[in-house]
Image (tube, rainbow, N blue to C red; front, side, top):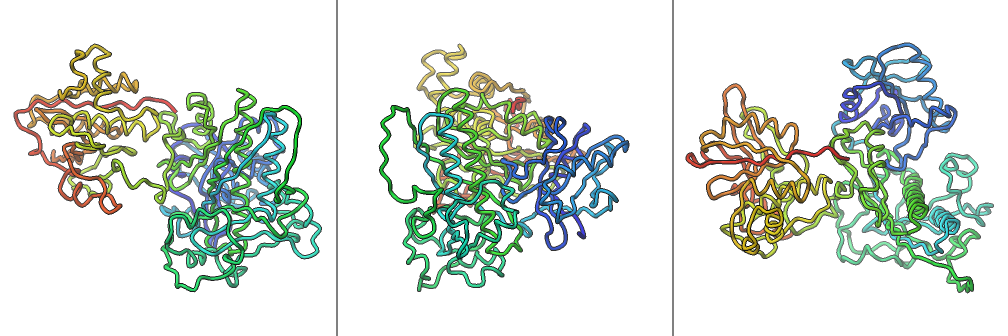
Length: 639
């Protein structure tokens, strides 16, 4: 191993940890010139009771293919350091240790940097190479599909049916199609195999067992030399989508798949994910003793039972080296679906045991700045509210060394893949396409917000609704950061809220009366339980004097700021401030825009940012003789 690759976000979390800690490093071993460490997980407290049990090789929250390949220790003393390292390494999977040297990260003092080593007995130092972008080394795959589970409302029957579903997708009954292509990954048993009458084992350790490898076989259709070509070559087979319904077919005639299209395909460029769909093979060797219901059956059960049907929306993430051979990608695809079905079974059973109810599992992907490009996947059941899951989220924050002052794994925090992004509605973060003026240091809003402005949703508030729209933008920030699940309020709902708290008379409802920053703070407090800080200036000329206040706000809280002055309201998204010269500009989001958000299916940024509706403004932007009041929402401490 020449070096160890890792991400700046992971190093920042290790160096920023203020306490002694130890745990495991997850990544991909043995790339061309070293291993890549992508994530960490704290050593579970229960491990202290059993030092012999292996760490879970399949962390249910991390992508399939990101395996435990090392350990880390943050310590203040070298006493018994080697012994602690050996204990941690001994709990790494034996299948990994038999062929790889584990990576060891050590930080010896709080103010020292993390060092990397291999071979725990000698602690040979190796250089750490920081990768700002790992996409040149790692391929991400996404496997989607829909499976059904029908059984009685009985714990034993639920367990049995989930186990049976696992067998079905990991034996020849399950196969995978590369989206928008004629490429299929098919399960086969080798001719004469004794396994032809039983499903594949669902134990992760069996993937590494030699006898299993001797029995299984993978066929990749319409790809020549798939045993020697790299998985990235599959991008050449992904075609531009011609029919919106093409990718939704669960039934695909084999003759169609095995026959290449005569029309020359329009190859699409690589995306964030290589997308696959899990399908069910209804013929051939798919029929086995453990998947007897591949064929239609009629069964009469005369017992009286309460039954239910669940729709399991498979949406799983996996990673692999770009040098992985096409045929070997099958293990990752299988693992993605296998792991997610197992997790779904766990959460469904947990709900049933706790509440004697059953609801559909829902898959959420999360991608936050502290974890860089690493995606976390969590399955929640539909009927369990976020308030019941605080202990689960807190443990995830602790396991990944994440801050405990903000939500990162609530439903509202979900990461939306670009291909799934809506092509209508308010724009998200239009300021990202704008460069900083470069006057000094730039302080910006943290996270995502939605741009709300005049005339949206067919509602005419031109001339009086600017502060309402700015308030909607502020609330959208708290929604998109996961602090609240409340809907964006309408103008009438905002007015009703102010009437109910006694700030306005009943005649205020359905009127066209303005509101200011004080009313914005009242609504945030009432609807979201969010406190705000108010900063005022007696004239626009004094706005540069409040640059330090704004810089501190964006650096600590990071919420958008509503400012009202004269007869206008705006939203401040950031500040570029030179503390030495006093030069300053403000990043303004203007709610007075009356145009469209989307044009020809794309964000209308040429108008919104090109004509200054979202842009940097100098001191002349503020009216010199107008009084201004800023509402600065304070980020609450929750997870």
